[in-house]
Image (tube, rainbow, N blue to C red; front, side, top):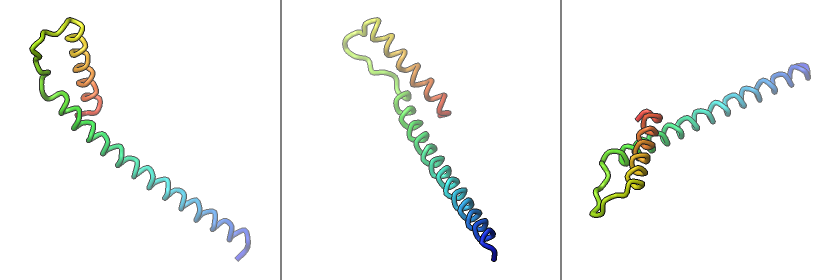
Length: 83
């Protein structure tokens, strides 16, 4: 076997190993992201499932507005995650 052929085979083997390693990394990252999305959906479902508790003191206009904006933001996140 010629020395040039040996280097070509070694380079092809190294390239194949790198392609496999990168593919496995993408697979593992994809699974981690999917698991994270499922956790976020669970949290968002819990946060938005029940209405806000009524306190004994009436809310000020600013507090009520802040509560509405918070709920709107959570519902928007919920739609973005596809929950």
